[in-house]
Length: 237
Length: 301
Image 1 (spheres, rainbow over the protein chains, first blue to last red):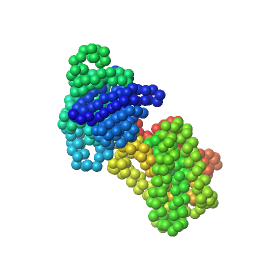
Image 2: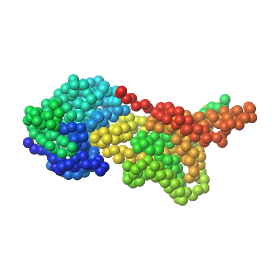
Image 3: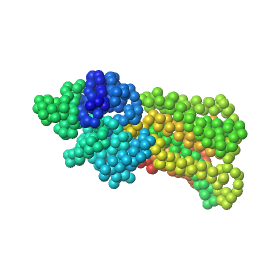
Image 4: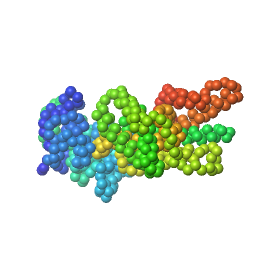
């Protein structure tokens, strides 16, 4: 399969501090890849680097096109949907307005309307809450809204930053189930960052493990899951 | 009683102008967290451009949209050229830039058009009508134009995708970028809109206060007071605040005069109107910094 995303020798900096050291990985079109690792390993930074939200060096290619150095909004317009850490809800806007902003760059009215229907089908609760101020939604609903916002941009690649964070296990299961459906039905490739390694390895088909800004191992999700020494030394379960 | 109504009516008319300026201040504040101290001088400069166009033979109602457009472009340019490089600068540097802009527009206007007071004809017909003893046609015109402007802005922010994108960019720039919104341009647009609103305010108030480089100095103070009373983060509140301050300054002076007449005791009068505005600013900042209508963001706990 062709690589949708190719990252080579990626370094990222917060001011003077280097957060990523020569990170390289690739992501197959149509698949779900997960980035695992402990707190501060550089998972979130990697996602931010792809969208040029931190200072980066190295090469990032989307479908062969170099995207590093492009403004965040330009990367997004190329078909990258970023579900950020903390969900990034527009708390003062209504649910409907949140979804409308998410489709701001699109001019294809009919397709946008279809995507809207698709979002309602995945997350019926959002349709019931359309006029509600988004800040009043529950954590789970806000996470659903965040995924929906990314979907409304008609992405080819979705970057998901800890979608399970702070949510009840039942809600997490529900959200992960729908993520699998989105991947299969809407043909959206995914790069998933998770602390909950067991959950992520369940969903993903490929896994990379980050430690202090470096990739320390990679492989098929099933292999990583079954390798006890990796689990014990890096994933803590 | 007649005098009281008259005072309230003229307070509303002045309030309309304060409301416009307050709105212009809010426009920039919500998107950048800065108070543009040069807002008044920019409005004054726009009024001069309007006057110049009229000198060249343009009708006021043609000149006004032209001036609004020119001011919009000036506002956008200021953000793109002067403030853009200062995006990560400390707030004090930006305040200094605003004061610099204030001085530049002030002396530019004086340099180009001179410091002598100029007559600025009212665009509204001088007609008499029932109740014209209380309020003149120009005053009614100021109120109407302001309200139309507000309605147009409300519709823009509420119903257009661009307006929505501007609100989103102001509220959460990072998420707006992730939705593909060009946040930098939204800030510039906010500056442009503020400058255009200021242009309308300046051109409308010029016939009432006469045209000269200092004309907006005290009006900007009232604009500040209005924005603070209503809540500097709320456009609707700023407008209400502008009207409240306009009426309040007249009422306080009116009752001050009344008191002096009846008891001979002079506390406040027409001379202290500006002081009243400053007292309002300080009172609001100490007692209720978010203003009367400043929204309290709903948060889950």
